[in-house]
Image (cartoon, rainbow, N blue to C red; front, side, top):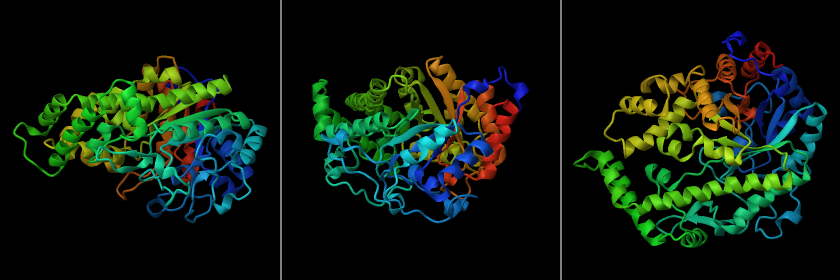
Length: 480
């Protein structure tokens, strides 16, 4: 696609070409080298900087180097990150939280504050710096999580599942954990001249967890108290979820159901409506965190943009699609960034569908289920048996998701498409990224009317030769 095919040429004065980038790249390559490469070679004008993380995807080097090799820049060695804050937390903001000391102990960042290193240098070049943060912060499966989280008493704030077992993620209902998130963001917003905040919330709901074979929560004391305050019978909800859990385990084990797995699931769900009450309660508390952070940022600096990095599962999962309407998100976001990592998307779809096919959609062949779900979700991609190797086509997938987001926000928020550039692969047969894929993704965004792009998920894993596709597209669009 080329610029003349666009209905409306983008405004160079309104250009938003962002890139997600981890702190280690600035240590490995030097601040000026990175900024020069991104600004002059690629055309980036906004850095989405990961400042607090225990995830290699956000703070480290490439986490899929064994499959993809090392990129053509940076240090070609694994980075044994320990995680934490890569800036110096101001103790004044943490007097009422149990995580006042969460500064990274990575030796590469001793005596280094990434915000003080990068923000002044970027501003001198006319580039903006947004902080980019993702919850849950700890031990996110598949994202190169740190082996241990060195924060005393954090384990006491964990979720509790329906069997009463301590979980692996902090409870967002825990007042001290929630207060820490507030404090961590207020600290950065007040103390550093950043230009925006991008927040990503990727928690699995109780129904998500059930379908994936797990035991849902959160039945921690704090969550129970909140539920009771809202008039919810916690024990009735727990027992309802337990019945659904038993069904999911039976379905995954291959039990035969007279009416098939899908009808039986609906029967169990309708017989136990309290499970949906808990799902709704959990969902609203999850969204409350997003809303609180939007209000917090606006209280501190009313002019500072606050946006949402939106999980691709929201457009791959029909339940999440119903739960996360775009129009609602415009009430607490100035911009949205739909994740569309096109070359990796077939692998993501395979994983998402596999959860359903073990339980609810067990009676459907994978291509049969894919065709039906694609129709429901508005997708038009390769057949199931070709999808992992082919990925999803930028001209249909990226373009379609951009159109969908624009229609959904209806002018209430800006849409910056999350363009996958060497997103980590976990399978050797997953489609590889290329300059052409990146080029066509950028062009598809602007052809759809998108307001900008965010190159994702981490510069440290991106090949410069693939990023050249961004530069080529921006040149055609008159944006570089």
